[in-house]
Image (cartoon, rainbow, N blue to C red; front, top):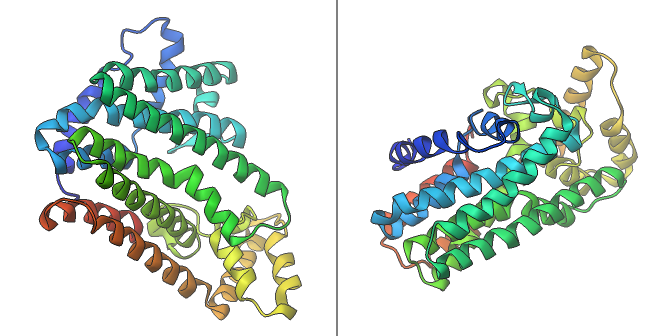
Length: 329
């Protein structure tokens, strides 16, 4: 069990339940409530809350509104991502545009984005509200840039590993970094600690996404997803790009052809997944991925070691990061 997670949920869940219940028009806010109540691990808002708690546990209740704003922002990105991906399901339930309609999904998503800033601007002192709002605004721009890079990569034949890491840093990792920084702001941490926690969250967020890539291929049924789903979709993941780096030059054309071929039935799908995983095993792609995760972990821990908290307190943040990165391994 993550430290103080139950205490976080006792504060966060009741706040979430009552949001938008009386807002009008109902048709605008039904999709918002629908998505926010679908569930999820709540790890980003928990990260914000925990950072505030570690610096000043008396301010944990104050952190709930900012934590909700961050989760609302994340949910907003999911609404628009699902539209762009034409995804029918989210957490096993119809996506917002599938459950309602496209126009409602777009407009409700827009409302969610504006409400994110409203929660930050109206829930705190002027100085803190300005800092929190600036942080979320900067992060929101970065997430949009990362999403565009992701879409650009889908249209490109060649993507470098460094470009991929730049994309996941913007699309995914900076949001976790901002969660820690915003929590530290609320908890009263100095600017140096805020920056160190941002770096810790960002490096952990990059590792989290790369671990996602790894577990998609090698996580088995325990990961709760179809094994090899990224392979079947020809996604340019960390493992795919690392495979390009590690494969013998004379095998590269065959590797690219095998990875990017489409399949028409279940038997072909199984064969493709098995072939790609066999090549990755032969070339040490899995080991190289874990080694890179260790480098990110070292960088994250180095940043965390710089903050002005007792070791027994900062260990709560370290435990959360380790749980995010090393799940199932």
